[in-house]
Length: 245
Length: 155
Image (cartoon, rainbow over all chains, first blue to last red; front, side, top):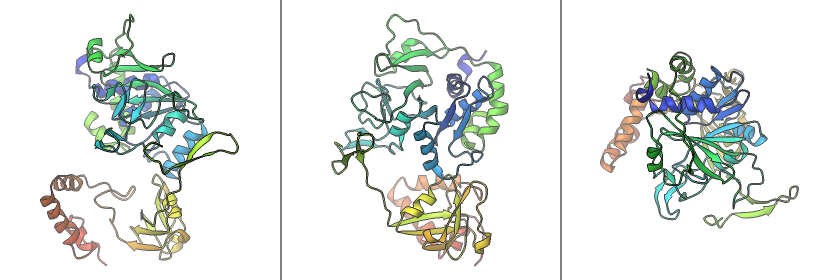
């Protein structure tokens, strides 16, 4: 019934909700409407006991800005955090600094905004992006500002790393055996070939059969429109209006 | 360290780990936007921002306030924090002073104005025009508010 007609953003929201587990402490920074919607949906479906902190939500009465949210992460209170990147590479490195050479960048990006600490000190991190292209998913990022695991660079206070990557094409996950991002599943109507063609690194499919994610259910669409949209509106008014009117 | 050779490392005497140590940023001046304030410098600001941290870190802090009240009336509302007069060097009364951005709890972002600004910022000529109209043109803050359609706040 839904399939191709479903907005990829809605698919991503539902996919993120399913990755979240009941009881987890979930936090999201600014500019993260898709994770925030996913988290609210999870709370209204399978995970009512999630504790959520959405930075910028007037309902969360934080006392001291980002300083306080970052402190929670450093203390080990946050199980799940969300990040994104202008580039994400095979090893889960993210780049929010520049495209091209650092000294002569083609594009200067806004900056890391504590993402290295957040990536290392949250128990697990879900990456999300609304574009799935070879320009974004690259073999090696032009600049690495946050790492998914302790490889060449050691982070003494690391307690977590990359868990999943959610895109309009499907879900990828981080394989901790090989420390690489691999394809997990694709959305209905998206072929594995499409995912492969749009990713700049080997997705580690091998002989595996990649499952197709089950279509978004009518019930989920109803909860999104009736409940999630209402809670989203004060935090992300423009996003909410665009998606649900 | 490759791109920031000025940064130094040191050993944490407790854990023994080697860390890059970043010097503190001490701004010469911080300008913060506050919802309420008194003539002595006590102000309240939106708690999601880091205004308290900024005011404490900067050598001089200027607080732009929406409303001037007596000290006992400057109380933090829901989602606000109080910044004591010792951290604030100057208070500027400018209602709607955050325009075209918003002031949480008071007024929203003026989306139409931001869009017009973005369009104007695309080339030098239109940006010059924007500056002449909204920055150099108005004779004072009140005149600016009238120009952007926010009415007359009086003196």
